[in-house]
Image 1 (cartoon, rainbow, N blue to C red):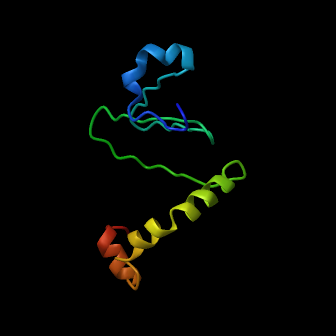
Image 2 (cartoon, rainbow, N blue to C red):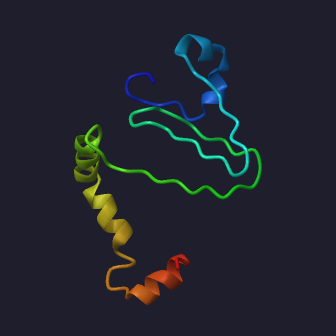
Length: 98
């Protein structure tokens, strides 16, 4: 990270991995991998993949999430404009959630 900006593709900087303490994990089918709070990470899928992940807010990052939400309020409102007023059934149909 330089000046608060994360690199788009960490693989472009393999020559710096050892110095930065980067490590690589190959996750096999059916395996679970836990990434602790505040760990910078990137995921690169090697084949067609279904990713089920859970991001959460806890004591270590609640203030950061709140600051981000406040700073992005206009963007969030714009994103939600298209679904305001949807019924539960319409949301399920729109996002194919069941």
